[in-house]
Structures are given as C-alpha cells and as structure tokens.
Amino acid sequence: MKIKISRQYIYLSVIALFLFVFVLLFSFLVLIPEGKEYRKNRLELKSQFKEIRKYQNFHNELADRLQDLQKKHRNIILAFDATFNPERFHKQNKAYFATLYISPLKPIEGEDEFVVYEVNTTSQINSPKSFYDFLDAINKSDWIVGINFPINFTHDGEFIKSSFTMKVYCNDKNSTKKIVKEEK
Amino acid sequence: MKYSYIKPRKKSAITADIKLTLTFFSISILMLFLTYAFLLYKSYSFHKDVISINTKKTMLSSSIEEMKSRILFIEKEDVIASRVKTQNAVLKDSITNLFDLVPERITLSTAQILKNSLVLKGITPNKDVYNFMLQAPLRSIFNRTYSSFYPAGNGWLYFVSTNYTDEEFSMKQEEDDNEN
Image: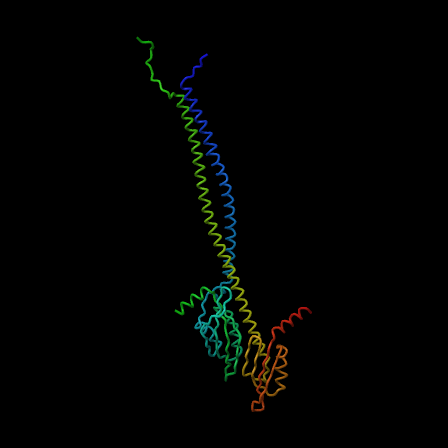
C-alpha cells in the first residue's frame, strides 16, 4: 500500500517541528534562566529597598537628634567656634575692672579636638565683689573661658591688684586656621 | 481542445493553510521574544535600581558617620563647657569663702591662691587675734599651715601665712570617710 503525502503537509510538518524545537530550546536555554534571574533580582531588590528604608529611618532619627543637640547647645557650639578676641573681651568685661590688661594668646596642650590657649591678665578691682561678678559673667561670655590658678590679689592703694590666668577653649580646625590667618 | 471549463490557476507552495500556520507561528515567536525583551529590560532596570540604591546607601552611611561624629563632638563640647563652668563656679565660691574667713581686725595685703596652696600676707593687731580668728579656720581647711610674724613698727604685726592641701592626704581622708 502506497501512502500518499502531499507537499503542503510535509512543509507544515517541517515548520511545526522547527517551531517546536525552537520554542523548546529558546525556553530552556534562554527564557527560563532569564526568568529565574528576574525572580532572584526582584527578591534582592525588595530586600535592598527594605534595608535602604532602615538606613533612611536611622539617618532621619540621627538628623533629628543632631538638630535637637545643635538647638540645645547652640551657645556652646558658637562659643567653641569663636576665636578669642582680646579687644572684645576687654570691652565686655571692663565694667568689672578699673584696669584690665590681657596678654596675647599662647597655645598650650590641647584636649582631643580642642585647642587650649592661655591668657594672662592683670587688672585692678574696686572690691572682691567685682571679681565675683566677673566670674559669674565669664560663664555667659562668647567664649569658653576657665579661670585658672595662680590667682593673686595684692592691696594697691584704693584698689586690689589682681592677676590670673585664663584658659580659652576653641575648636582645633577653626581656631588654628583663623589664628594662622591673623598671624599672616 | 479543452478538458476543463475553468481557467487553470497558478499553484503555489504557500497555501492559505500554511499562511495561517505561519501567522500563528510568527505571533508565538514574537510573544516569546517580547517576553525575553521584557525580562532583559527588567533585569537592566533592576541593575540600575541596585546601583542607585548602593549609591544612596553609601551617601547615607557617610552622612550617618558624619552626623555621629558631629553628635559626639557636640557632646564633648558640652562636657568641657560644663566642666569649665563648674570650675569657675567652684572658684568663685572658694574665693568668697576665703575673703569671708578674714576678720575685720586683720587686713590682708596679698592673697595668692594656687592649686593646692594659699599664701596670705597682711597685718594683724597681735598674734592672738591672728591665731584665733584666722589661723584656726585655715587649719580646719588646709592640711599644713605655717605662719611667720615680724613687727610692723606701730605695734602691729606683719604676718605671712602659707597653707597647703596635700592631695594624697585629702584622698585618704575621703576614702576613710567613705569606708565609715
């Protein structure tokens, strides 16, 4: 018995077979691995987004805390950033003294990121009360100034001659830059 | 001589069936390629997102580090400022107490306040006034007290009082107090 197959059927079969093979190969070799990669990337991206959200939240919390601290300690920050100005100091505190002489700044050993300058002062006061008032006022001044030993009081006619050392605390970077500029 | 009533048609290998099949196959292949293109685009987009997330993460972490160090620095500034202010307040109290100690009958000419010592120079009507009214309170404050006198000429006496606080002694005393 002779089976008669038309040419169209043969063409159809060949094309169908070709398509079948192509689809199979394309799917297993290209599409499925790419799909797996897509799924993996999607999961990874999701976890990355989760992580970045955590980072962002932590960042926002820190920013809030820093802002609060900066608001709360505004005066202290400004005081540390300010360069000590003997003329301004003299102007601010001359009310407490009959005469006030301030020596130039002398850098001494610093603390961590801070530079400490020593200033020697000699002055004349009318009564010890003026000195107490000065000690109260110094805590509200534009700089972080600590009165240091030795403190000498000598009776000098109507006045009391006083001499003492002050330690002025500044931020390392700002103060050194500014002082170098001033020296130039 | 004609064998048929219709005109002969041209025969083609691509029949209507094959055309339909080819259209169907083409759509299938196009869909496969579109899916692949979608996957490729998504993969590219993920890659881009990951890069942007990493950049943002780096920026955030450097900003976090910067803020942490800034917070630490402000806290340090606050500690130093508080310490200096407390020292100034303590110093004021010490000087106030010192001048309050000196009775009216004794006149001071010099007071030298050092970290662990105090030197007072002045004039007193007599030794007893000095001993009872100035030296006694000074002895209660300082560990060692030395006094010397020399005549002033008008019957009064110049005096020099040197007082020391021994840090070790004070620390030992504090420890004893704590134990008790």
